[in-house]
Length: 416
Ligand SMILES: Cc1cc2nc3c(=O)[nH]c(=O)nc-3n(C[C@H](O)[C@H](O)[C@H](O)COP(=O)(O)OP(=O)(O)OC[C@H]3O[C@@H](n4cnc5c(N)ncnc54)[C@H](O)[C@@H]3O)c2cc1C
Image 1 (cartoon, rainbow, N blue to C red):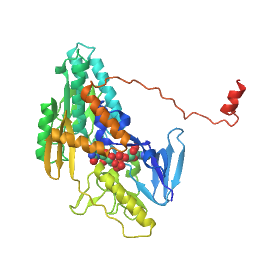
Image 2: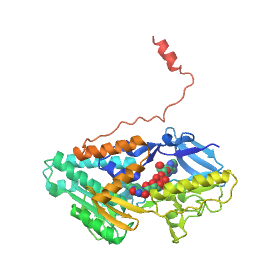
Image 3: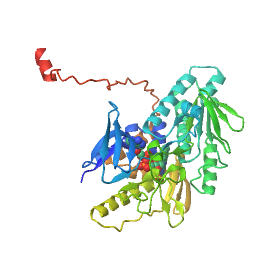
Image 4: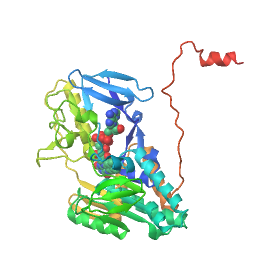
């Protein structure tokens, strides 16, 4: 048996802590774990999957450094390509906003926040300072709410400790929700409480509002309003990548791939699909399982078990069934919210549960330790506001292999 893993990044990303990287609380490498640490017996290829041919059983991949395309044959295929940000076709919003899906998104936001503070610290013009210090997050699901509250905490602590020339009254932190509430993933009572907590913290929530357009320093709203802001972060939804939406198979809601209870693609006995790109029906409720990491981890175990059953010629496969015990989010300085086994919890208790649970879930002892150290350091020291500027990138796809070039050893010897 030979296993090949293909991914366009060479690490596993622990997304629940992504907003904490954006606010500079955690170092990016503390929430990214090299794939090679986990899968020592598998072959790993860092490359982009360009297409999947289900008929010929081929996967076309392209490696990034020289754009070389090759095809991989498979007997069994597991698809777990996740999703990508959905801008609903709005090119201006895509061009002028940040998002919160990848580690580079979080690093970009962190650097941008610091640049905005440095610019604002140099101007006495209130209008300009207000535009530089207006931070808008569109999308009030978990990612949006956690991102805005992290940004809010970062701004509060950094301005008071490091930017005395900034007038805190010019800071506006705005959360835009298209619905009449925030956090549609949790019950209404807890969501109302969360709204109160984050509003008390100074965040403005604009409900029943949609962002319709944007430019470098504005966001245009559906109610005719236009906000002057130099920072727009879009967490307004996800969609499938082209590889998934163009796959010749049955698609369901949001172009996700329809699978059966054993996570097998319909009419394809050698293809399994899991994670955010799979549409899995919960037979007990007749609804679809949500796109969360909690589910994906369990789906992964079912797929592995089913592959092993197939190799052993067993036709009776394991069915996926999982009901989440709870859901939680951090929404302020030492404040969280959680629903655990049907009970609503908020405040310090939820914050402590969040931290204890997620630090136990992040893979490898080293990363757990690094995260704990970052959290401890943050509780006693000011947040780091170093702006790491443009990094020089060396393009290497232009390297041509010349067979007549002497080896490095020969070159060194001839120079002696
Ligand atoms: C900010 C944020 C916070 C979250 N917080 C929580 C939380 O607290 N709890 C929770 O349960 N869930 C949370 N989630 C949701 C959770 O992260 C996702 O449900 C989960 O990551 C989905 O896993 P996946 O394997 O399907 O996709 P992903 O984790 O997206 O992995 C897909 C992988 O495929 C790679 N890839 C994609 N296309 C290609 C291609 N063409 N070629 C090669 N490689 C490709 C990607 O780079 C990525 O590495 C959060 C998500 C975000 C964005």
